[in-house]
Length: 220
View 1 (cartoon, helix red, strand yellow):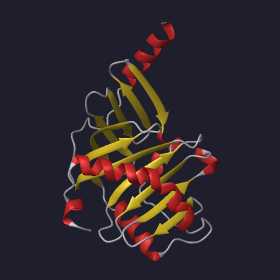
View 2 (cartoon, one colour):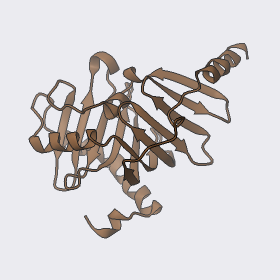
View 3 (cartoon, helix red, strand yellow):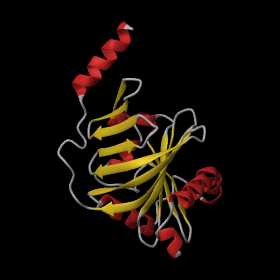
View 4 (tube, helix red, strand yellow):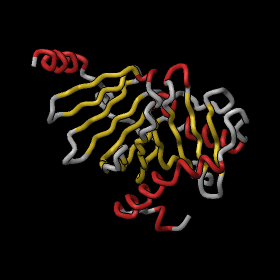
């Protein structure tokens, strides 16, 4: 990996993420190890390393199903907690408190709440990423990228999460969540800092506000 990639500019990162989002699916289809095959020791070491990162923060770029681009800052604390603060002009915040995931739109005053256990995001935030079970759909190992695709059909239906790691540093580069309709949302992370603690309310969901906003929506 060259120095330019280690210290990416926002423009370079956007270009790289777009290319990855467009090419990830055919690459995996051609080179992936079948789900029935046990992941290699190297892939499990990468997954274990990521599982041992108890907290991290940094910046992200997100590509939606229609190619729309957004970004901002993220905060992650294992197990189960993550927060995305989207930068302007986006009005969104996404927060998981370990039990639920809320999508807040401050402009539209909407608050959509989902059980974390019913979303593939749970597999990213689990206490440990175990590649020996039947949740492993495929593992792709290349010189500069290790790709791990996970699913749980009984819980998430056809939804999957695909995580991409640097095989040398074991660092997470990006993940893609594919929903039941086959639509992809890709998140690429950069300027990542591992470790550290966060304010007590970082992953707090305002359940009262959620109830109030949804009550207003029903009355409109």
